[in-house]
Amino acid sequence: MNRTPVVEIFHNVALDARARPAGVLVGYRHGHELVEVFVCRPAADHDAADVTDTAQRVMDFTAGIENAAQIDIALAVAFDHRTLRPVARGDLLRIDGYWLTCESHGWGTPSDEPRLIAPEELTSPSERPKTASSPDLVEVADGVVVAPAAIRSNDVLVAVGGRRLPAPVTVRDVVHRRAGFINPAEYYPFGDTWEVLPRSTFSVSRFLRERDYATVAHRAPVQQAPQRAQDGVRG
Image (cartoon, rainbow, N blue to C red):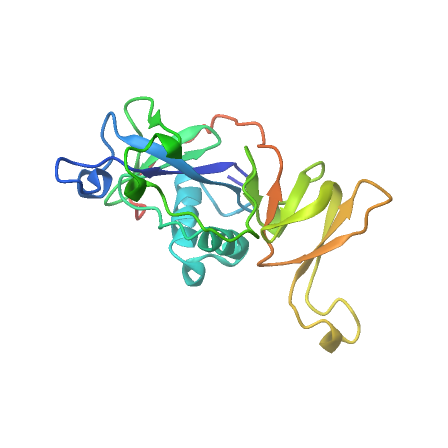
């Protein structure tokens, strides 16, 4: 799986008769309610064999910046800024349209079409997934959070690092520059950098570092992933 899939994270908000989180206790079951809390496009991992490898990367970066792979640092920062809880047993991922359930050990596939609800449909405010209240965070309908390494030509950027841009920027190209590309290197001590080249000649380039996640205005087309879940991956 060496491209950049669209990953959607859904929290299981079902409660049992004692108002406890049912997903954590028994795993995902038919009829459990799910709320979409995060959509992202990770950088391509050329070592990934199937969707479960991508799922494990997602689980790792939702668990904290210190657990994220180097190429997922920006996504971990974005997820942390929204103060969402990590992916846990009973939650679901949708990777390019292919559903995975987080199990106690590994990943499974749901036997039915999951039941999706909007946050405002939750019966109690205490059941709502935690979201950050910072005005700097940009919530864009159908938006996708992307790591700098996952920005593609023709992406329409509307925010960088959670801050809205003065105007949307259509990307012409992205140039990855290694640390110290300016001579002498000590004048540029920030590590690897991605220069985003705009399509418009009236716009200036933007330089993103590894923690500078971007928000793309429109969701990439969803494709069905051909691989099926495999056992043996920690969930």
